Every structure is written in structure tokens, then in C-alpha cells.
Image (cartoon, rainbow, N blue to C red; front, side, top):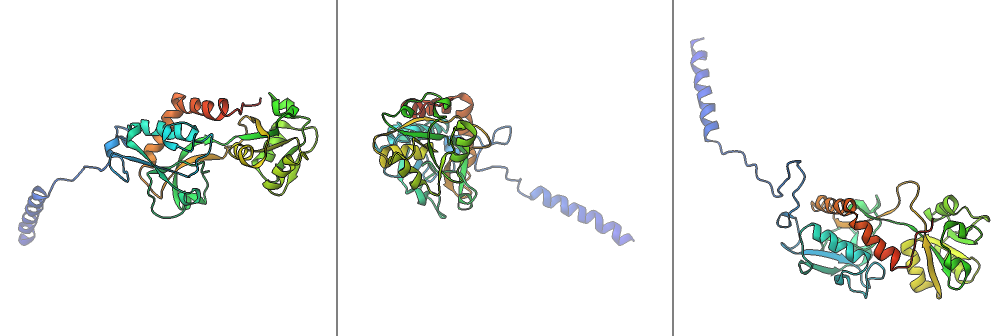
Length: 289
């Protein structure tokens, strides 16, 4: 019993001595945090490919209205303007941003990336998110109405003006649901198994209008159907729409700061202004109500 009483004090003394000699806990972090625990997202603390430089990827050619004059660096076009607005939120000036040519499919393929983020009309999906990380959505994809120039449907100003149209649309798409729910035409839409058949129907005047997602509508008028125009776009309605997101390397820590930047652009109304300028007004795609 005497031995136990003498050993315990000695052990306690040894533990106290070891604690006194142990190094203090290292509480430094690689990314400064705010009082709420969220990353401070200062330029110098961001996990970038090259310190002090923001590298943004996109495809080439870069089509309008997403980019203008095939030059992402000029700040013109919806996605160029969004990219520089995000960069500004992170503290980068225009000359601190560089652009990297990245093919569309390569942007969300598995593996290391040579960009900090890519912007190229990439829809957020669970399948793609297995290989890359997406930011929160920066654009809710709308439905576009394409008509041949010179027809009465090319100059409609509201949904009522499309009631009597023969509408071409692809089966099983959000476009078909939008036609049924929002336009509610007096005759059943002409439903095709694939998109190219719906496009051909408009080209051959078997349909008065074609309804596709707005990005596709821009492509149809630019490259597929001569003498066609976007009559307008349908208003957003219903469940969560398809969204475009910024693409990052899988598990990139930069995503939190990109989400913050996009959130600020939304809450300030700046993102809506960019969309109005490049995808509605100058693009000639008014919202039909």
C-alpha cells in the first residue's frame, strides 16, 4: 500500500512535466476563416493552379451569345461577363485572369485540370459530378422558341400568340413539358423521337415553330436553320430547372469561394443584369408571358 501511494504522485509529476514541455497545438490553417467559420476567400488564400493568377477554361470556338468575337478575354457575352464578375468578387483584376482552351467534353472528364474553373454551358448532373466538382448554378436554362423569319410566329410577343402554332418538339424533354404546361396549344404538338428530326420539321415548314432549350435555340439559328430567329423564351416555371455550373477539378476547395461569389452576384442583382443584357436584350430573346 505504501508503494502505491509513493508511485502515483511520482507518475502525476511526470505527466505534468511532459505536458509543460509539449509544443503548443498548431491552430494555423491554410485558408483564413471568418467569424462564422466560412473561408475568407481572399485572393492570396485561394487554392489556385498559379498563385495570384486565376485560370479559366472554355472551348474554342466560343460562340455567341455566351462569348463575342470568339474572344473570352474581352468580357463580352454572357459567360465571359459572368467569369469576370466572379473573378472580381474573388479580388482579381482583368489582367490577373488568363484563359485556357479546353474542349467541352474534356472539361468534365475525370482527372487533373489545367484550369481553376471552366465555364462553357456545362449542365450540372449527378453523372458528371462523379468526375468533377460543380459550383452552384449561375444560369437556369430557359426554353427558346424558334421560328422562320417572315412568318407571323416570328414576331409573337406573348404565349397566347403561339396557341395556334404547329409546334415541333422532342419527346421526353423539358421542352415538351413546357409546351404542354405553358403554351397549351390548340392542336397537339408534333413530337419527334430526336432533336434533329424536330429541327428538320421546322426547316421543311412542317412545323411553325420549334421549342428547344435556349442554348440549343441559339445554335439552331446560327448553324442549322437558315432564315430562322428566336421569337422569344418561355418564362421559368415549375420544378428546379436545368442549371449551368462552373466546373472544377474533383474535390477542389475553391468551390466554396466560387459559391460565395455567385451568391453575392445573385443577391446584388448583378447576375440578373448580365443575363438581361446578353441573353435577353442584345440576343433578341425576350421573355414571352
